Length: 293
Image (cartoon, rainbow, N blue to C red):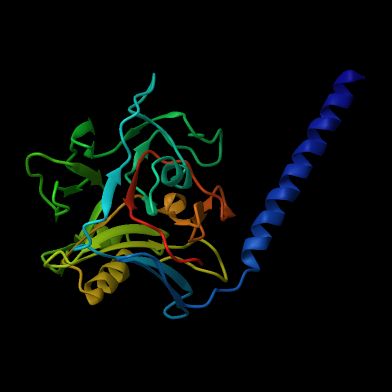
Protein backbone atom coordinates (compact mmCIF):
# COMPACT_ATOMS: atom_id res chain seq x y z
CA UNK A 1 0.00 0.00 0.00
CA UNK A 2 2.84 2.38 0.88
CA UNK A 3 4.52 1.64 -2.45
CA UNK A 4 1.34 2.59 -4.36
CA UNK A 5 0.98 5.79 -2.31
CA UNK A 6 4.63 6.77 -2.90
CA UNK A 7 4.28 6.07 -6.62
CA UNK A 8 1.17 8.27 -6.84
CA UNK A 9 2.96 11.07 -4.94
CA UNK A 10 5.89 10.76 -7.36
CA UNK A 11 3.55 10.99 -10.39
CA UNK A 12 1.80 14.05 -8.91
CA UNK A 13 5.11 15.83 -8.25
CA UNK A 14 6.36 15.08 -11.75
CA UNK A 15 3.09 16.38 -13.24
CA UNK A 16 3.22 19.58 -11.21
CA UNK A 17 6.85 20.15 -12.19
CA UNK A 18 6.02 19.53 -15.85
CA UNK A 19 3.10 21.98 -15.79
CA UNK A 20 5.27 24.59 -14.09
CA UNK A 21 8.02 24.24 -16.69
CA UNK A 22 5.51 24.35 -19.57
CA UNK A 23 3.92 27.45 -18.05
CA UNK A 24 7.27 29.21 -17.75
CA UNK A 25 8.18 28.35 -21.33
CA UNK A 26 4.78 29.49 -22.68
CA UNK A 27 5.13 32.77 -20.78
CA UNK A 28 8.42 33.40 -22.56
CA UNK A 29 6.89 32.54 -25.95
CA UNK A 30 4.07 35.05 -25.45
CA UNK A 31 6.37 38.01 -24.78
CA UNK A 32 6.67 40.83 -27.27
CA UNK A 33 9.86 42.67 -28.15
CA UNK A 34 10.73 45.75 -26.05
CA UNK A 35 11.35 49.19 -27.57
CA UNK A 36 14.76 50.60 -28.48
CA UNK A 37 16.30 52.69 -25.74
CA UNK A 38 19.46 54.53 -24.67
CA UNK A 39 20.37 55.29 -21.06
CA UNK A 40 23.51 56.61 -19.39
CA UNK A 41 24.49 54.28 -16.55
CA UNK A 42 27.43 56.33 -15.28
CA UNK A 43 29.83 58.96 -16.65
CA UNK A 44 31.34 57.45 -19.78
CA UNK A 45 29.13 54.32 -19.67
CA UNK A 46 26.03 54.25 -21.89
CA UNK A 47 23.58 51.40 -22.42
CA UNK A 48 21.77 50.88 -25.74
CA UNK A 49 19.03 48.36 -26.43
CA UNK A 50 18.68 47.72 -30.16
CA UNK A 51 15.66 45.77 -31.36
CA UNK A 52 15.53 44.23 -34.84
CA UNK A 53 12.83 42.41 -36.78
CA UNK A 54 15.02 41.59 -39.79
CA UNK A 55 16.65 39.28 -40.78
CA UNK A 56 14.90 37.75 -37.76
CA UNK A 57 13.79 38.88 -34.31
CA UNK A 58 16.92 40.03 -32.46
CA UNK A 59 17.37 42.01 -29.24
CA UNK A 60 20.90 43.39 -28.76
CA UNK A 61 22.24 45.02 -25.61
CA UNK A 62 25.27 47.24 -26.08
CA UNK A 63 27.22 49.03 -23.37
CA UNK A 64 29.54 51.69 -24.81
CA UNK A 65 32.41 52.77 -22.57
CA UNK A 66 34.57 55.88 -23.14
CA UNK A 67 38.07 54.73 -22.20
CA UNK A 68 39.63 58.13 -21.47
CA UNK A 69 37.54 58.27 -18.30
CA UNK A 70 40.15 57.82 -15.56
CA UNK A 71 37.49 56.98 -12.99
CA UNK A 72 36.85 53.59 -14.63
CA UNK A 73 38.22 50.43 -13.06
CA UNK A 74 38.09 47.02 -14.76
CA UNK A 75 37.86 43.63 -13.10
CA UNK A 76 37.98 39.96 -14.06
CA UNK A 77 36.58 37.72 -11.33
CA UNK A 78 39.35 37.04 -8.78
CA UNK A 79 40.50 33.50 -8.13
CA UNK A 80 38.63 31.70 -5.36
CA UNK A 81 40.10 28.17 -5.30
CA UNK A 82 37.71 25.39 -4.31
CA UNK A 83 38.32 21.79 -3.28
CA UNK A 84 37.62 20.43 -6.77
CA UNK A 85 38.17 23.41 -9.08
CA UNK A 86 39.79 26.76 -9.79
CA UNK A 87 36.79 28.85 -8.85
CA UNK A 88 33.23 28.61 -7.53
CA UNK A 89 30.42 29.32 -10.01
CA UNK A 90 28.64 32.62 -9.42
CA UNK A 91 25.72 34.52 -10.92
CA UNK A 92 26.76 37.62 -12.87
CA UNK A 93 24.41 39.70 -10.72
CA UNK A 94 26.09 38.34 -7.59
CA UNK A 95 29.54 39.20 -8.99
CA UNK A 96 28.40 42.76 -9.72
CA UNK A 97 26.98 43.26 -6.23
CA UNK A 98 29.87 41.56 -4.38
CA UNK A 99 32.58 43.58 -6.15
CA UNK A 100 30.61 46.85 -6.43
CA UNK A 101 30.70 46.99 -10.23
CA UNK A 102 28.65 49.38 -12.36
CA UNK A 103 28.15 46.92 -15.21
CA UNK A 104 29.15 43.28 -15.70
CA UNK A 105 28.89 40.47 -18.24
CA UNK A 106 29.53 36.74 -18.11
CA UNK A 107 33.02 35.63 -19.07
CA UNK A 108 34.91 32.54 -20.20
CA UNK A 109 33.79 29.06 -21.16
CA UNK A 110 34.09 26.56 -18.30
CA UNK A 111 33.61 22.96 -17.28
CA UNK A 112 32.01 20.79 -16.01
CA UNK A 113 28.59 21.91 -17.17
CA UNK A 114 25.18 20.20 -17.50
CA UNK A 115 22.05 22.20 -18.24
CA UNK A 116 19.17 19.76 -17.82
CA UNK A 117 19.96 16.28 -16.50
CA UNK A 118 21.43 16.64 -12.98
CA UNK A 119 22.20 20.32 -13.75
CA UNK A 120 25.64 21.61 -12.80
CA UNK A 121 26.95 23.95 -11.49
CA UNK A 122 24.83 25.59 -8.84
CA UNK A 123 26.22 28.72 -7.22
CA UNK A 124 29.45 27.98 -5.37
CA UNK A 125 30.08 24.61 -7.02
CA UNK A 126 33.57 24.02 -8.38
CA UNK A 127 34.42 24.68 -12.04
CA UNK A 128 37.46 25.16 -14.25
CA UNK A 129 37.95 28.07 -16.67
CA UNK A 130 38.82 27.30 -20.29
CA UNK A 131 41.61 29.61 -21.45
CA UNK A 132 43.71 32.30 -19.81
CA UNK A 133 42.25 33.91 -16.70
CA UNK A 134 44.10 36.60 -14.75
CA UNK A 135 42.78 38.93 -12.07
CA UNK A 136 44.95 41.59 -10.40
CA UNK A 137 48.12 39.93 -11.78
CA UNK A 138 47.14 36.51 -10.39
CA UNK A 139 46.82 33.76 -13.00
CA UNK A 140 44.33 31.04 -12.10
CA UNK A 141 43.85 29.43 -15.52
CA UNK A 142 46.62 28.95 -18.05
CA UNK A 143 46.43 29.91 -21.77
CA UNK A 144 44.93 27.35 -24.16
CA UNK A 145 45.36 27.38 -27.93
CA UNK A 146 41.65 27.04 -28.76
CA UNK A 147 40.55 29.74 -26.30
CA UNK A 148 42.04 33.16 -27.23
CA UNK A 149 42.10 35.90 -24.63
CA UNK A 150 41.94 39.67 -24.25
CA UNK A 151 44.51 41.31 -21.98
CA UNK A 152 44.32 44.48 -19.92
CA UNK A 153 47.29 46.52 -18.68
CA UNK A 154 47.69 48.87 -15.72
CA UNK A 155 46.87 51.91 -17.87
CA UNK A 156 43.56 50.39 -19.05
CA UNK A 157 44.88 49.40 -22.48
CA UNK A 158 43.44 46.31 -24.15
CA UNK A 159 45.40 43.91 -26.32
CA UNK A 160 44.92 40.61 -28.14
CA UNK A 161 48.43 39.52 -27.09
CA UNK A 162 49.88 39.30 -23.57
CA UNK A 163 52.33 41.87 -22.26
CA UNK A 164 54.15 41.84 -18.95
CA UNK A 165 52.79 42.37 -16.41
CA UNK A 166 49.24 41.20 -17.20
CA UNK A 167 46.73 42.97 -14.96
CA UNK A 168 43.66 41.09 -16.17
CA UNK A 169 42.93 38.48 -18.83
CA UNK A 170 39.69 36.87 -19.96
CA UNK A 171 39.31 34.15 -22.59
CA UNK A 172 36.68 33.49 -25.21
CA UNK A 173 36.27 31.09 -28.11
CA UNK A 174 36.21 32.99 -31.39
CA UNK A 175 37.95 36.13 -32.60
CA UNK A 176 35.20 38.08 -34.34
CA UNK A 177 37.50 40.90 -35.48
CA UNK A 178 41.28 41.33 -35.66
CA UNK A 179 42.93 44.44 -37.17
CA UNK A 180 39.47 45.64 -38.17
CA UNK A 181 38.78 42.57 -40.34
CA UNK A 182 36.39 39.70 -39.72
CA UNK A 183 38.52 36.90 -38.26
CA UNK A 184 36.12 33.94 -38.38
CA UNK A 185 37.60 30.81 -39.94
CA UNK A 186 35.80 28.73 -42.61
CA UNK A 187 35.24 26.04 -39.96
CA UNK A 188 33.55 28.57 -37.65
CA UNK A 189 31.36 29.87 -40.46
CA UNK A 190 30.36 26.33 -41.44
CA UNK A 191 29.20 25.61 -37.88
CA UNK A 192 27.64 29.06 -37.38
CA UNK A 193 24.08 29.30 -36.06
CA UNK A 194 21.71 31.85 -34.59
CA UNK A 195 22.47 31.88 -30.86
CA UNK A 196 22.68 34.05 -27.72
CA UNK A 197 26.10 35.76 -27.67
CA UNK A 198 28.40 37.80 -25.43
CA UNK A 199 31.32 39.81 -26.85
CA UNK A 200 33.93 42.44 -25.93
CA UNK A 201 35.27 44.84 -28.59
CA UNK A 202 37.39 47.99 -28.78
CA UNK A 203 38.20 50.57 -31.45
CA UNK A 204 41.59 51.12 -33.20
CA UNK A 205 42.75 53.97 -30.93
CA UNK A 206 41.19 52.56 -27.76
CA UNK A 207 38.82 55.43 -27.15
CA UNK A 208 35.81 53.14 -26.92
CA UNK A 209 35.06 49.70 -25.54
CA UNK A 210 31.85 47.80 -26.24
CA UNK A 211 30.24 45.04 -24.21
CA UNK A 212 27.59 43.29 -26.29
CA UNK A 213 25.03 40.71 -25.22
CA UNK A 214 22.49 39.31 -27.69
CA UNK A 215 19.41 37.45 -26.49
CA UNK A 216 18.41 34.24 -28.23
CA UNK A 217 16.52 30.94 -28.13
CA UNK A 218 13.34 32.87 -27.23
CA UNK A 219 10.62 32.63 -29.93
CA UNK A 220 8.66 35.84 -30.63
CA UNK A 221 11.25 37.82 -28.65
CA UNK A 222 14.80 37.18 -29.89
CA UNK A 223 16.09 34.28 -31.96
CA UNK A 224 19.78 35.06 -31.51
CA UNK A 225 22.52 36.14 -33.90
CA UNK A 226 25.08 34.46 -36.17
CA UNK A 227 28.77 34.99 -35.45
CA UNK A 228 29.32 36.63 -38.83
CA UNK A 229 26.38 38.98 -38.22
CA UNK A 230 27.76 39.99 -34.83
CA UNK A 231 31.25 40.51 -36.32
CA UNK A 232 29.79 42.69 -39.09
CA UNK A 233 27.74 44.71 -36.59
CA UNK A 234 30.79 45.38 -34.40
CA UNK A 235 32.83 46.30 -37.47
CA UNK A 236 30.17 48.85 -38.41
CA UNK A 237 30.30 50.30 -34.88
CA UNK A 238 33.99 50.98 -35.50
CA UNK A 239 35.59 48.12 -33.57
CA UNK A 240 39.07 46.91 -34.47
CA UNK A 241 39.28 43.87 -32.19
CA UNK A 242 36.40 41.74 -30.89
CA UNK A 243 36.29 38.50 -28.93
CA UNK A 244 33.24 36.28 -28.46
CA UNK A 245 32.93 35.01 -24.89
CA UNK A 246 30.75 32.20 -23.54
CA UNK A 247 27.24 32.37 -25.00
CA UNK A 248 23.96 30.47 -24.95
CA UNK A 249 22.32 30.45 -21.54
CA UNK A 250 25.44 32.04 -20.03
CA UNK A 251 24.93 35.36 -21.87
CA UNK A 252 24.08 37.91 -19.20
CA UNK A 253 24.34 41.69 -18.81
CA UNK A 254 23.85 43.25 -15.38
CA UNK A 255 24.01 46.88 -14.24
CA UNK A 256 23.97 48.67 -10.91
CA UNK A 257 20.71 50.63 -10.86
CA UNK A 258 20.25 52.70 -7.70
CA UNK A 259 22.40 50.30 -5.71
CA UNK A 260 20.67 47.15 -6.95
CA UNK A 261 21.90 44.59 -9.46
CA UNK A 262 19.50 44.60 -12.40
CA UNK A 263 19.65 42.16 -15.32
CA UNK A 264 19.30 44.21 -18.52
CA UNK A 265 19.03 41.36 -21.02
CA UNK A 266 16.91 38.20 -21.04
CA UNK A 267 19.17 35.24 -20.20
CA UNK A 268 17.81 31.78 -21.05
CA UNK A 269 18.99 29.07 -18.66
CA UNK A 270 17.35 25.62 -18.56
CA UNK A 271 14.76 26.86 -21.05
CA UNK A 272 13.48 29.63 -18.75
CA UNK A 273 13.58 33.17 -20.09
CA UNK A 274 15.03 35.56 -17.54
CA UNK A 275 16.66 32.73 -15.57
CA UNK A 276 20.31 33.55 -14.80
CA UNK A 277 23.05 30.90 -14.98
CA UNK A 278 25.94 30.59 -12.50
CA UNK A 279 29.18 30.90 -14.52
CA UNK A 280 32.89 30.61 -13.81
CA UNK A 281 34.10 34.18 -14.22
CA UNK A 282 32.96 37.61 -15.31
CA UNK A 283 34.13 40.95 -16.64
CA UNK A 284 33.13 44.09 -14.78
CA UNK A 285 33.56 47.86 -14.93
CA UNK A 286 33.26 50.09 -11.87
CA UNK A 287 32.31 53.77 -11.91
CA UNK A 288 29.73 55.92 -10.23
CA UNK A 289 26.19 54.99 -11.38
CA UNK A 290 23.91 57.94 -12.09
CA UNK A 291 20.90 57.03 -14.23
CA UNK A 292 17.86 54.87 -13.88
CA UNK A 293 16.15 52.44 -16.22
